[in-house]
Length: 51
Length: 266
Image (cartoon, rainbow over all chains, first blue to last red):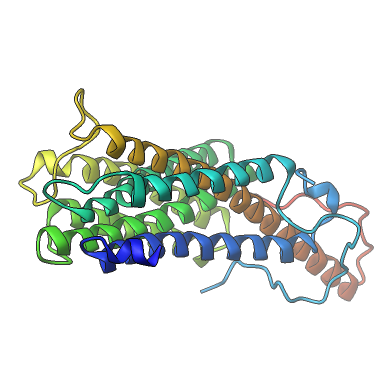
């Protein structure tokens, strides 16, 4: 992946754009799942309709 | 200002038998499909599609920028729709959907601004200019931040109604963002795809289409999980409210009722 990016024009821009986007979505997904886990423990199973 | 978020570290009874997450079989399938298309998107976007004649490899930012912009619009439209339904029905589900879609809208509009800025520096020679498209998109981001902040300011039906009205106002701004390149002289290029003969074709069009599909699957997966988190927050808030009422009743020597009435949706 690194060598492929370095062979491109504007590798820094392409890498920042792609990794930044994937990273932001990844961090947001992780934070959402973590928050869901913490909250789930405080709610009766009957109120978690997806369980 | 009051933070609506419940105290996650509060000392409470923990149910150890039920699964403690927001996942379900459907979200697991959706998540796997999203991951698979993300890999395909990266291969098309970074490897299999050729560089552009004019933009060279900077065109690869387009495969992130445009899908994220469309998903940001989707988040705003969903927020507005859910806000309208909340004003009409006052049900907790619509409120949770509005909160979830606004957050996702903000995530994707941020990606749109960052990737657009990077692309702008390559093609225009500047990261930022007060162009109509860029300015209206930045305003959309500010409105989403404002909407999410407003939701946390006042925990009451009136406060929620104000937030819902602001949610409705996202739609006119999305229309302005989308049409700005037609209405005003703009550095930003006009629509590449939304016309009878798109300006891209072949593997470049495929890279964009796969990116759009991957983005849509990720968006749907995130929306479901975030909606469930918002639902859980509402349940915890109601539980805390009932506990507080019971404590006050006990202090005042009022007999406990067996069942409390459901809190107003917020």
